[in-house]
Length: 317
Ligand SMILES: C[S@@+](CC[C@H](N)C(=O)[O-])C[C@H]1O[C@@H](n2cnc3c(N)ncnc32)[C@H](O)[C@@H]1O
Image (cartoon, rainbow, N blue to C red; front, side):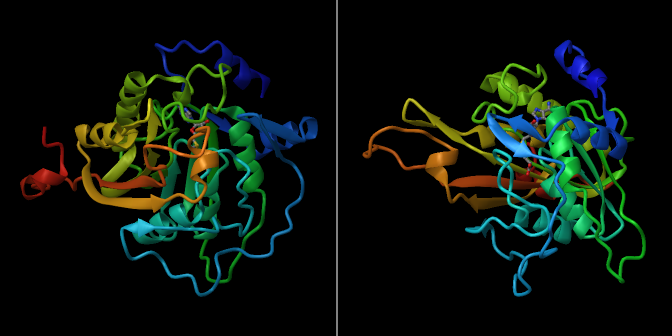
């Protein structure tokens, strides 16, 4: 682990770091020395045995059918917990995984944070690859994956790998090998995940540099994804000087500009807007509080696909 932390601190921003596997053994060693990690000033406890009551949402939960999604109670089955700042509700990767992949396929989350996508992949019988620039986040993800889950109808053991790395350089993943990407980048600098500690953290960047970085993330996503498969990206907007900043629009353009086609623009409602998104003082505002995020679902075209009929769902400018 020490070696990984050193790489982070001396990283040269002009040369993107490569992926480094974090094994179960690395995790065991880490939790023998650490009982918690700090993510954006929040202590996240790790290394305690899990007492799991449920391995999925309530039996009567039905997958989403419309383009507006709302999860007032975020979902706390298996090892999911809301205490990793800015983590996404497990209902989101669950819906993407169920709709756009099959058991035994490979799901990638290259900004995996606390590993919500990886836990859902494991529960749904998909292999998973998780990458995060922050070694502490990868330890949280490993922690949340530390549970046994076996069902009689699972034909094979699921394999989940976690790496410290940069979403702009997935050097250990070969071209066209991933069946589904489900990822949730920082919303530019709205939440600072690692402060000044990790140079390659995208949440440190100002908006133009952030959008530029997201173009590289999009290009890597396009490279590793199989043809005719899907990439889901959740992204939110912000406000400054009482005006709206559409971060999501820049991210949409970044993904379209590398060749993706827009399959869906799903509005995900937010339920804790004041605490999670803006800290405006006072009680009266001349604007509306932002209460939605965009979940874009992109499709990589099939080999030799004639995409002209879809020209207004592609890069049009
Ligand atoms: C919105 S959080 C993801 C939360 C995750 N969906 C979950 O449920 O825990 C964004 C993550 O991106 C990571 N990140 C920031 N810059 C990155 C980069 N260049 N490459 C990979 N991960 C990065 C942050 O450390 C943070 O964990």
